[in-house]
Every structure is written in structure tokens, then in C-alpha cells.
Length: 122
Image 1 (tube, rainbow, N blue to C red):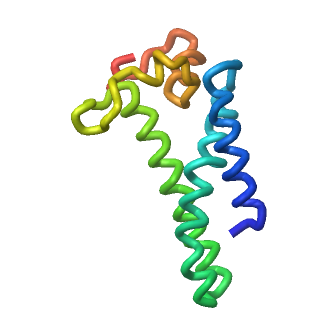
Image 2 (image 1 turned 180 degrees about the vertical axis):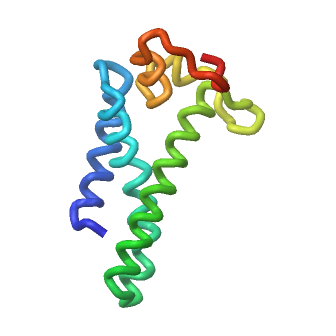
């Protein structure tokens, strides 16, 4: 696990609030998701192996797994905030849109140059 991952997680949570206001590129949104949920899950997955004295390759592998799991979780959560069933998600549909959050799907749609996303209703 990179030594800076806990700091990146803290920075990601602070920068998350900035998504509501200034313009963000798709790369910036993905970086923010990586510094937020992905970092939290990377640390969580690697911590047991690290504290248990596991070999570095196991700690690193679990950290990478957690990072990918966190990215997938965050991207799906962003989609559900737009199209999810509020009875299942506990969030009103479109709440992130009304709050003007620049999540990954919103920024991707805004930068698509008029291209449609088949299957996503865009």
C-alpha cells in the first residue's frame, strides 16, 4: 500500500465538495474517485495482511484489489444517484444532478460532444 494513500483519502474527501462548483475534467473526476472511495477500500483490504505480517506482494495485491473495488463502487454509486430506484438506494433520483455535482457520468455526458451512450439512456 503506498504510504501516501491515507493522505490521498483525506484530500479526496475534502476535494469531493469542490465537485459541486467549478468545472472538472473526466480525468479529475476519476482521480477524485480514486482518492476517495478507492483509497479507503485499498487501505481496508490491505490492512489485515499488513498487520498480520503478510508478505509485501500480498499487501500490494490486496491494496490494488481494494482500489479497483472502490472505483467500481464509486462509479456505480454515481450512476445510481442518477438512475437508481429510490426505494433501493435510499436517495431520490437525480439528487446529485439537482445538487449540480460533477460526478463521472455527468462530466462524461457533458464532454461527449453530442455522442449518445447507448444503453444508458443518454
